[in-house]
Length: 179
Image (cartoon, rainbow, N blue to C red; front, top):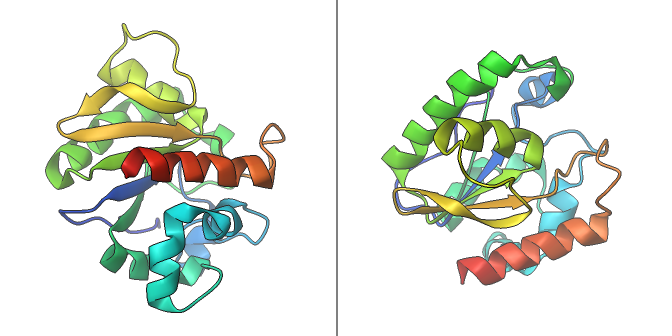
């Protein structure tokens, strides 16, 4: 079991998680755990303003994930296998999944693909461009076709380095890069 990709041609933005949690798969939505900072931070960001207005909500919730396709936002994961914790994934899974993800991005060609944390982006870039320097947060030098790549801190509550306010700030930076 996994979450289906929420992808289609013409998207402005695709959020890329490391892999779906068992909990999110059971709920049927991306970033479904209440303690995950994705939805609250996105909801406070200018990045989601037009979608929130169109949906007539102040705060986006996990059940809005599929609805966001109509607002130019999609979702997928680096690795599609659900686990309780991302550290349960094998490095070989990341390598195989990186090639599959690159193919999806080449097919759907969103304007920007945003990785939710370095844990998902590092193995991707090792496969796609192993000679690039060590990645940092923000816009990346690597593109997949016309798709620009961006990395924000992981919204997982296990990421103690990024406060909710900092997470929101990164989504605001992503909005500026998109616009």
